[in-house]
Image (cartoon, rainbow, N blue to C red; front, side):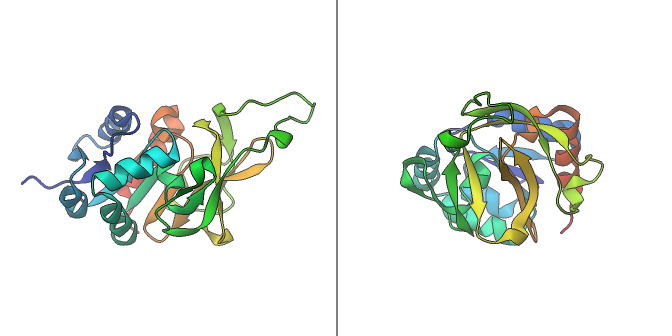
Length: 214
């Protein structure tokens, strides 16, 4: 079997093609495999865990394919990148359907509160949070290399993570209040935005991930 450099976890949710194509673009010499096979995830050198949709559906599909344990093990053993719902599912529970997550990290996933959805001039902000927004980098990390502080990334989401451990936070976005948009610990990095849809800055983050040796 050909060595799997990067496994993109396929549990039937989200646009996996755009993620895999972006990875192939930044790493044309590597073998990128979109897979729902737990064994391939176990064998891969790196794992990308993307997703779109509702948290209860994502968790159900992940469980039904026998992928939950493979993902949890990957978060502990090899360079791991979570994207969008792939960030949210790493936490204990979400307000979306009161769904239990994978529990890799302590914390909750919360919906943007309607009472907060106004900008500084009183104009109403929409939920889902959709479009480009700036990302503040409160600390340095290898995946931020050559990505400017306050660079813009692309978002589509109505929920955000609230980690119990403040040391996890490595990216913050305002909408309208600050929320955690990126976390990192050891071999794991996960983001709420979509790097595969974030033009030059997103491709740079993916390129950094491909070359990251935690």
